[in-house]
Length: 459
Image (cartoon, rainbow, N blue to C red; front, side):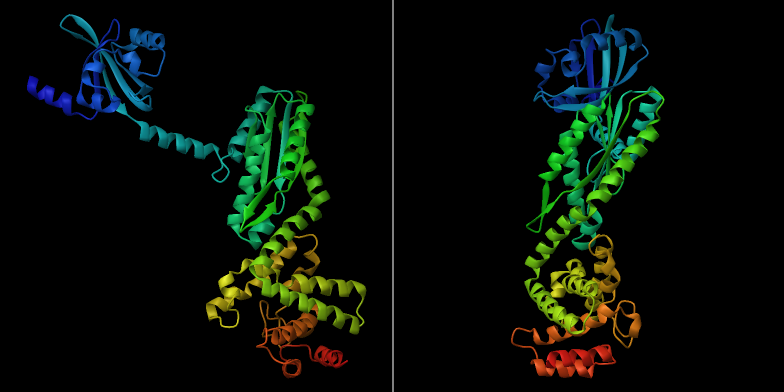
């Protein structure tokens, strides 16, 4: 029986330690202890259990004095010989052996379980993408501020400008980089006790306990200065960070925290409206510059279209407003191409059916970009329909005739003409291109506008 117990003692995976009750000196250990702690047997037998435990000796002694006889289960951190630590679950009980009171401890390494639990708890309170607190945790802290009546408490709401534009043009990967950049800026701007959270897709909020209006305004100034100098790099192009910021302070016991939040939120939206145009333009210019580097041929094509279109518009004696819209349409009608892969754009004349459908999405992508940009919103429908045909066989809506915006009908003719002659020596002659335009009158193009374009080109 002794041999069987010895076999069990030495081969069990759990650590077993016997120590004297009076001073904690270790008198027996099993092989699992030697392996776990990294000490030799002789070294362990010269130590006491408190040297292995990352806790206060007095605290553990008091607990054992009260609980050891009936046993106690403890979650502790233990130390290895190399100084590293690991989490353990220790079952401690006092036993009498040969008229001596001993402590028997059975220890299980629960590091993996503990780390998994901590990760789960972290996910429950933090935003996965940015690592900041999430909305649920933020709302819990707001409720705590109200319940404890912490006065003064500041609230700052930050909205990242241009996220939708970036997602729609260069993809969600770039959008995620923008949000991470914003989160990094906010981390650097606040005190340890401040609660920084991502509370929506592009929205962040900060709770500043015991912060006066002066402290809050200083924090806002820090954010603005850091935002001015913050960019993220995507495909070798630096894209600027822009934020709209609003703030408010709970400065008395009667003011509800919900009112403070609403005030800060309204202030943020007021600022967003104030500089929406300039912030979008900065982001849009960066994206266009990046696309110009990716597709220099397309930029050359757009410049040629714009030049002919401006002259044709003058020939048609259009109003200055319409001419300006046509110039913008010439520049931005293919902006949705930003969202199409270079693989497809580089072989645009030899696409299979699947690739054609993918290419045609540039109209819808361009529409979404225009709708999110104050400078282009009035062109959104034109950008969507610039590939519609007079006979209704175009895309994406298959509208026909005069249901197609007038500007789109003008653009369609000029765009096709430039495309036919703009093949770097492989295109049609100008005369051949004009014949093709005439041939497609009433099919692809507005027949009346075709006659006017032919006359314009003759002149």
